[in-house]
View 1: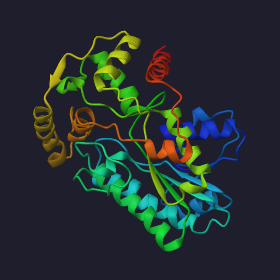
View 2: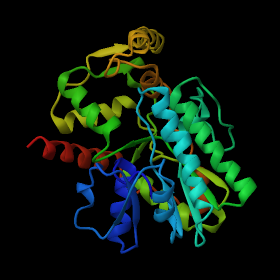
View 3: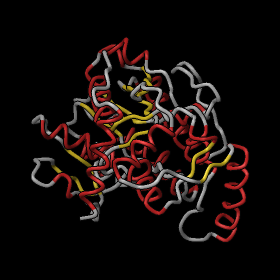
View 4: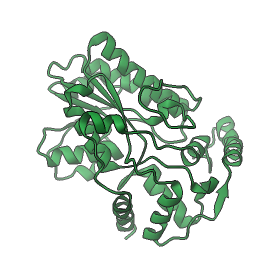
Length: 324
């Protein structure tokens, strides 16, 4: 599997190792793998540009989970493209030579739908919305479908929405820090459903999809299906962290305009760091992300077991433990 030094891939590796599976991960030489200490995970050192390491990692694989990606809301085009497109292309090339392969599970995202005003089902086409993450994840997924059609690779695509949980950077660590610093803002009062997906629930969905014979050649949205809004999420998080609620609220239009202005100097002058607000973040916070999961429920019995309250309790507890 790829991406095991990261959030979702790291949790998947932990769960598989705990089950006693033979897990092989591809990881860079400097990757932080402390969360896998004490497991029997085998590490092949290399990255998604290293054909030899990729070949070694997948040689005896029956299942490949491609979790590696650049998923931040702000990076250079090259960073997004190399990780989400070129890396996927290289892994697919290696997978074609994996003689024992039974399933290739590609982690995509609901962002590939192009941020429709009304969340859609899996039949909706991939749409280029002009944001680098959306564009490159869509291009990477297109390569996966090409490998399925032309090479018969047994692929399954999962499209998670807003993944959070322990070790999660975007929707756990950063939001916790923004709440603490009183810099967190809501868009339109936080009334948009967030499409929240606790990381263990996503892992369960991925494993169920990988085990389902009917999931070959199919895509599945994954989220918890609670309909919880950003206001509900932030209230629970702030209560668990004992921080004030956000005092900044912007309309979607004002926030989008502000983000566009803030991005200009970073893009033109190639400033380090990231803007205080990005258009990608505004869309995720201000547009309905509750994509339907009926297909996953129907076809392989997807059932998110960790509730929003429990997921936030675990996430906040992990954050508190980091600060001790």
